[in-house]
Length: 231
Ligand code: ADP
Ligand code: ADP
Image: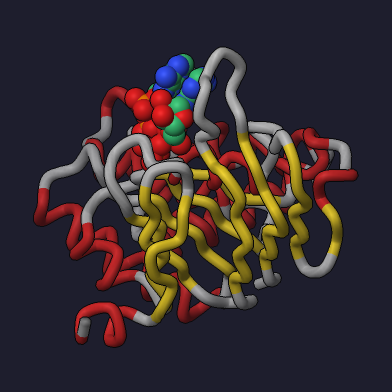
């Protein structure tokens, strides 16, 4: 993984009087899972999306692995950062394997390499390739779709994985399984992972560190879960 650093980051949406993120300084170590938690509207999603520039910061700088990504081509940047959203965000008319190969195709990998990578990733997320490779998302459960979303995000081996409420739409048992799977994947691949959640238990279970935000993207606490739970 690579480190992520936010310096003086501010986001003011047009027409809003108060900034969604007022002044954020944050350093995430390479290879950590950091969970953003806090009440609805406190700026979690805004902050996450500024890291891959789905949202442009109004002010400030963001560095990934020491590179100033606020100066990079945003499309290129997004090809190098995995992104997973709540309901998987899969292309509904594309099969599982076509979904997983999205970024490798953009990067013009050859067919054989894409096929091998797809098979590896399906195995990694625990989906049998023979059963699921040609399936459409609508013919899979929420949890299975979520796994495809994770596999797709990992396709080009990005150093950073951003996840916005990735397990919010699945039942509690499936969610617990997916959380365990994510921890296992993290141990195997050593990615830097940022996960937005409104679920404090999920944050303390998954995070090497938990970032508790309050309105305006203010940092209340940023510490390992043991420390947060002790207070
Ligand atoms: P969270 O993810 O913590 O629920 P968000 O980052 O989605 O919070 O939102 C932070 C604040 O910014 C909220 O007050 C929200 O209403 C506002 N906001 C989010 N997106 C937009 C937008 N596109 N335009 C205007 N305001 C927005
Ligand atoms: P989440 O914060 O979990 O992504 P939301 O339901 O808060 O989901 O927001 C859904 C979408 O609407 C997001 O793309 C967000 O940027 C946008 N949005 C959120 N709040 C506002 C707002 N006050 N004005 C305009 N767009 C908003």
